[in-house]
Image (cartoon, rainbow over all chains, first blue to last red; front, side, top):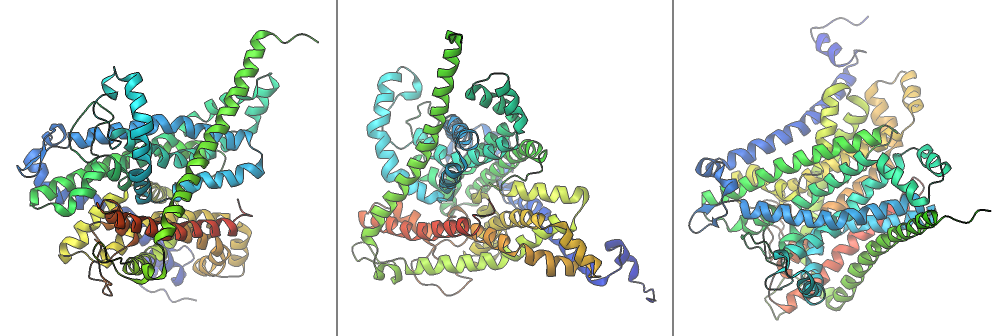
Length: 323
Length: 280
């Protein structure tokens, strides 16, 4: 018989078997889980308290003002918000059709012995560091776009304000294309999981009704639509926060210009570029506030994406790949 | 046999076109990968020699190398692994073996969402909680920033690997009278060890390419540094600084440093792929 001690109560609560080791083990593991939650809370608190100076000084005007002039002490985030959104949209516009094509090819068409190695190669694109994409972007992609892509675009679509202005190869378009390459492996990997989770009976039913291969694929895509939406939003989240590669090719000029050829700036690249140069407390505080905005936006975007993807994949018992 | 109706012929043509396009998308993605990798090899190999790998940076025109950056990256990876791997694996154990109910779902959700938080934000956070109070940049802060990126990745792969361990193993051990902690640490964890190890390697590969969270935590240095409370160089920050410099010589060094970094990252990825080829 174990003599009941005054400690046995909390021990029971933690471990029904009353084993001391179990109680300690579960308690420790619970603390670790709690730590994860507190990291997120600490992030919000730390970012918010360090940006308080800027929040007090500018209020909501911070989001609406397009004047970013550290010397004059003027800080408005609109150029960064604009650059972030437009570069991410360009990336999605290019990347989504390609990612869908890749995922469809690997899941629905290619035999296993092709799909595996090719799938691995596509995923390797995600293993290349951001700074390496940036290096490649500065020396290969930007000159290539300046010579071979942007002049024809200006010639054909020059009547649109989107494709006017001086051609330098450094700007929104280049940033968007680099981002597109970087998020394609992420979107296509999640879409692959989603398509794999669509039951085979859907395909058999479509084919039995006389559908062609493509018509069958469309049935599968419609079935996986919520998961695909999740994958796209996940890619958006990645594009919004991508830093180094964009910083190196987007031109880093806090101006809003309709032209995709014009240099721009994103929230992430502003932080990367100016953080160590911030000379005044207000300047630093404004940059931290940019970080807070980026954190909140990407947190919400990722949360939505996870919910969408989980709901599709969980039905078949799979687990979403950590993208 | 009936002749094929024109509308059906159109359907077939459309199907053929679309299924070819998907193949072309895949081909383009693989093509871009090969172009990037081969160009890194082509540009990098020229400046790569033994001196470059062990020397520290010198002013333009005097050569110099990335020895301090390689050492710095190793130190940062060791630090982040020391913080990140035990914590990440513990979170994975909690999610798979211990936790039940709403709080656990919340933790899983937060861990998953953390993998999507931009690494630059992690950098700002660590700057706020470590660099500001310590009053200077340090290798320690860089290690913590990388660890924060590592933890959610390791946690999720650990959870997945633990869930692959058959339930009969847990039941068998419990039936023999082992308490839960011994079952988990002595039976389930070793059974999943190889999977967790490969997950850990992938996480290390992932953070070894991180630049943004190091810019204002580890900061960078042009010298060999052996103190954890001082700024420290890293391959990625060095590549960034050289890439945006106006000197051709430094550009060449950036490509060579990239070749070293990519060899490490691709090496890990290919080894992991080789080790796990049966599982996937």
